[in-house]
Image (cartoon, rainbow over all chains, first blue to last red; front, side, top):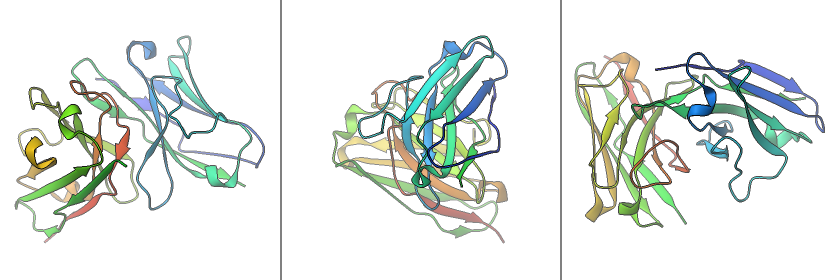
Length: 111
Length: 121
């Protein structure tokens, strides 16, 4: 098994760009796809990025995902921040035994 | 429209059992693998279990292995989670989620709204 580590919180102003990291502690980050979920207060999670960098239909192109093997991490970048982007964001991957692994979550504040 | 509606959550004493259900609609249930994911109050997401379309493969998180059993009834478009020997640390909102494939549950694409399980004496 491995762990996915995210910053507990990030904040940025409306209109700016923010990047949330997700670092895998062992094994190559590129070995298994990474997903990103958005969870607004009181709501169920929704997918904003799947398979490292794919956007589901309906998710604005302000959201993008990437993988960096040099830092063994995945990143979610949100550009042109809006107040509606304020939420918790979770990265997620899986291991070779099919166990699904979530990062601890990052609270994004748009102020 | 894909809909997942969980039920069965309740206040239960430690050591007791509870069975959660998830009613699926808006898609061909037996074409998809399914998950249970939980979220303790104020905490992050924790994967609990996954099951393939035909129940041919089932996996559990170590934290629930031997106590929880996932199952599905494709004729009833329903997913279940039998939870035995419940502990205080099982207190959480339990989500039913769909995997976008039939034979693997590497991610979720649709989630229900959750059902709350509280384990307390």
